[in-house]
Length: 184
Image 1 (spheres, helix red, strand yellow):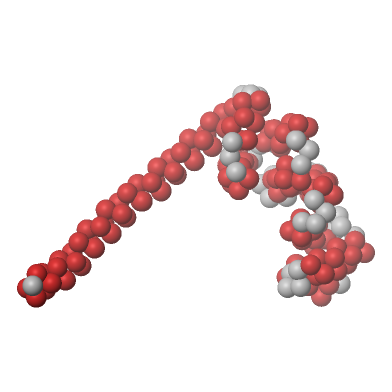
Image 2 (image 1 turned 60 degrees about the vertical axis):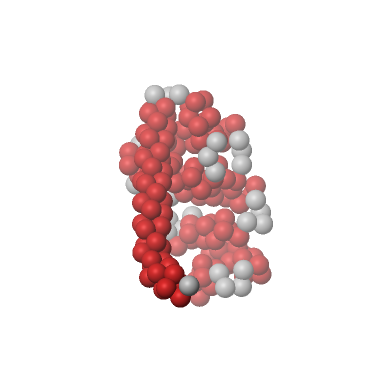
């Protein structure tokens, strides 16, 4: 009996190593597989958008969760730098006037396409709209503060103070709100 236990304990680390190796191999394959699926999905969506097939692109995008939508659309915008991505988002906003869609448009225009003249102003419009549609969303309010710190200062000092104060009522440790109040 003791000999059997000794053999089992000696083999246990080997068995665990084998199981861990199998687990790693399959999970690593799954991660690689997901990366391939994401790449193919991004390419398909980009092709649809650039061929003006917004309806089919919308159908594909709508089956994805919001995080994945942001990731894929933002990647396409950075990869291409093409304003057509914004045109597609405008099409989506016409159909679904939601804070998420406006927030996505604001994010694209204030980052990937910010070099286009009027991009920050467009982003500011969408950020305001997103905040109006979801007035209790603190992250959207924090994003609005960004428009006070850019050189164009699209958000006035008075509005920045008001928004920062509102944020701190809900989120006491907001670095964005504290930073604005400290700067002003």
